Length: 552
Image (tube, rainbow, N blue to C red; front, side, top):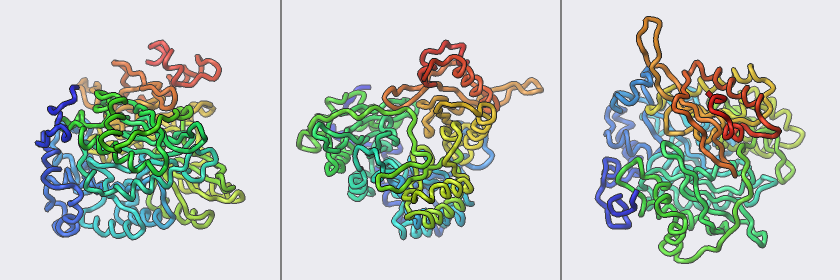
């Protein structure tokens, strides 16, 4: 794609909106919709909401209409938005760095139980999403969240979304840097800032000193990755332009070294480049990754330094090697002598009741600090050594496993057709069925594996970088009467991974399985791996050399 005025780049003088989304943002900043919800829409109810607010600006405060129940995936691309949507909302609570106090988690749990039918989903971006929310209740929910220092500000929309950070930030014994201060400063300075509330598309950030690289810097728009320079000073290596969806691209290093006190300024510079030079003509090409692909890292760094920072940044070292499988599950020693206890969910799904009980557990056993993870898990911090086994048992009683099976540990899922208007298939239940069947059929499977179940091509569950990635599709199958009907199915992606050997999964044009066949297929391909692998060979490495018929 040619980078130029024709792509709607503000910095090149093209301010005329080029599509309905750009016109909507020009006409009324998304940040202004909050007051209309408080003053008007909570009183009029759903039917009184302006469509431009309902399907656009509401996202600036984490609100999406949820899918009406019972609409099959085959109707997703056919029906108009107003035909797909219910009169309830998904509400995304922004949790930067996954950082929660017991008081905050208790409030989230209570809100879920009272207003959201006791459902709560932990996302792979450290947020918590609630469902079944009525517009009449949103202002009260905001009041309760804000009273404990939480919000839904810019949880969605063409904004700087939640900023990821390691759940063990500040306590990890092996951290290369402590990103806590840099993260807090960046949020304090720029969250809700009108200077960045109209970006070409969403903008995803991670800032972390984690030695495991657990917040996946390879697929963020901008990532600050912990490193140490030649003198041993901790700082950050900057990566830009990562993202998945229908055109996946890995982020690239700018090659600069950024100190902790420079992170917020450099973040604003990168975000400013996206705002001013990002492509606004087509929504399908509006992410930062497309601009970086056209410019390259050398030009990007030059523009960042000359136009935004007004100074040069020093060259910096590459990060240490990254493992393909990253999480913080189990009992982990903190640098202060206490322990963190990390646990998995059921593919992200939990309940308000469980969250409230977890908050109580954090108070009774530890110091009231909880973290969410980028793998849809939860971590309890500051557990005394003598209380770790009690924590493990009590977490298990809440449906949170600190000693999960290989498949439980590695399975995640997006929201799916249960609530998402873009989805083609159900995901949470499918993921759990696949996981439970693999646990039953391959109980001694001894290698880390990721199974990511996604409801559509948008990759909210990162199917392209999973060992086994299931992308939801609708497939015609023959019924008993000989007619053809729509069935939920998956296109399979195999051998994807993040880390030092990052690669997107292999896919084959004919490799599609119905949802009911997914456990059988996963068992077959994993059994083939066990039979043919070499000593120490990962599943991704096996897939890269596998003959095609081994994988079909």
